Amino acid sequence: MTTKVEEIIEQLKTLTLLEAADLVKQIEITFNVSASASVGAISIASPTAGAVQEVEEKTEFDLILEEVPADKKIAILKVVRTLTGLGLKEAKDLVESTPKNIKEGASKDDVEAAKKQLEEAGAKVKIK
Image 1 (tube, rainbow, N blue to C red):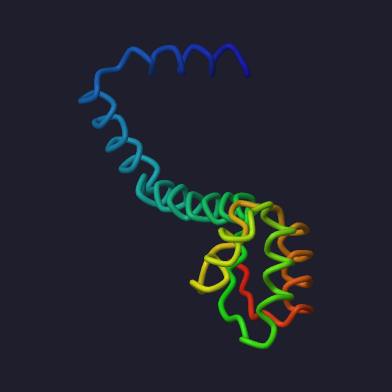
Image 2: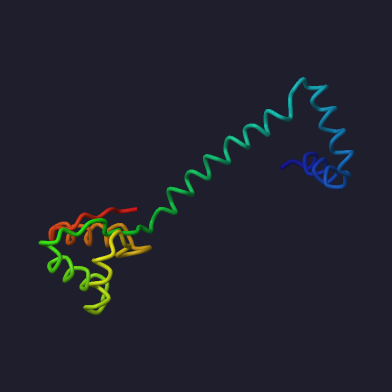
């Protein structure tokens, strides 16, 4: 930055809120511009940044056991025990009380692998 610009910025820092509002009005009148246009640009940029953030945040997934056919229950129970480390009774209770979360906050690869195992055993699962 040039010295002149730095001096202007230092002067702007010392303005009161009323003086700053008056300055904005005078700039709008003098240069025939609108300060609200730049505010609109900022508000448009903010949701975009939020959308990017949401995409980045979607690194944790839940695997939900939705349906267990009666004839496949034992095979699914074995897979659930392997995936969760639960005991026989806890895994049986989980399988019998569908829909239930099998994995929470897991990576996409882990959830996809678990989904594949459960579907091969005959379960109906969903990734959230």
